[in-house]
Image (cartoon, rainbow, N blue to C red; front, side):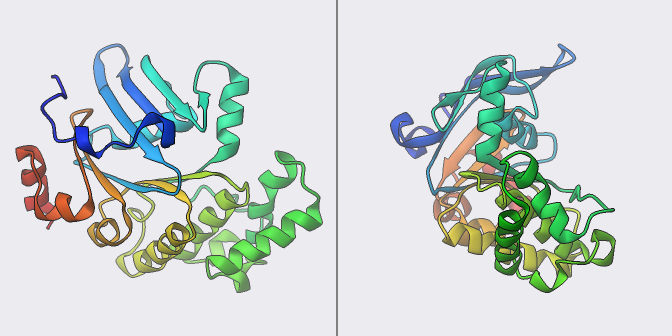
Length: 259
């Protein structure tokens, strides 16, 4: 299906001012399931983009292509001026600039919170243990769990574990943060604290791309909302236009089910 009629043309920044440029991205699973169908998206530095859509629409797969966690077969993706190719040096360079937070926290259960946060900076960024711990403690304070630094993940609530995961990603000092439904595995009362951490991160000027169903977060924090369905970008708009005046029938139907 051609995307040209969808309401996206006037809501894309130029490539020159974009830190992420995805052009005509296509992906298949097992050569028969067409999960991404010519997806285009540009994200500006310090912009917060929220991607919404029904289950199976390709949104999580799409953001996972930004740091080569998912390969793609056609099109191009450029992150911070580096084209994402099969070249491992390019992939490693991009991954150093892109932090990611998943649905599951993926913390090492046998390491303390502090050790979870300092592990990658020490091994990948080659920071001294003292410097890595100094930065880690600052980040744990930033996400509101400094007092938990010497506990183990199993001693924390789900919301606290997810904030450790955010601090761990930030410890690599990325230019871009990707969030793949970071609150979907949490109990409702824990969602607020994680979203508050993400709001503070957005306020600090971090470039963020978030796959989420949290409408309140999208309304308050996003610069643009992207709606995906059946592996395509259907509509891109400001939160005000997206929620109050959607253009596409598919978007209207989706919103009628979640609002």
